[in-house]
Image (cartoon, rainbow, N blue to C red; front, side, top):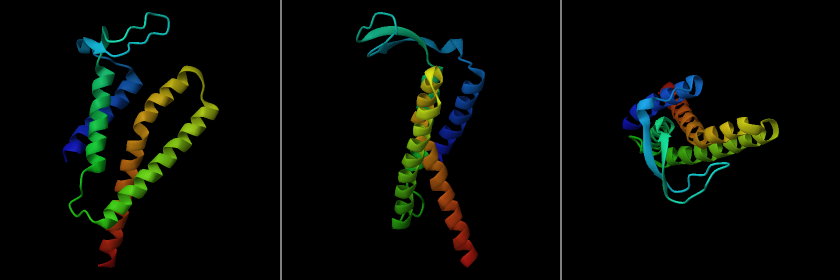
Length: 146
C-alpha cells in the first residue's frame, strides 16, 4: 500500500514534469557531486554544485515506489506468484531492450538522451504492469471457475 501511495503521485508529477518542464525554484540547492561533468568545463571530482532537485526527488520517489509495488510480498505469496513475478521481470527486460533497440535505430541526437533517461524507469514500469495484469487475469479465471 505504501508503494502505491508513493508510486502514483511520483508518476503523475513525473509526467507533468515531462510535459510542462516546470522545476520549482524553491528546490534549488547546493549539493555534493562525485563527478559534476560539464561538456566544455572543468571536471573535478567531489565538488559542490548548484542544481534544481525537482528531477532528483521525483526520480527517487518513482524508483522507491516502483520497487515497493513490484517486490513487496503478496498476501498469499506462493510458488505460483514467485513464478509470475520472475516471468514478468524477464518479460519486462526483453520488452525494454526491444524498445531500446528500436530507439537506437530510429532516434538520434539529444532526443536519444531523453530516451535513455526514460529507459531507466521502463523496466520497473513494464514489470509492474505485466505482473499486476497477470495477477488480475488469474484472479478472474479463478473466480469464474468457482
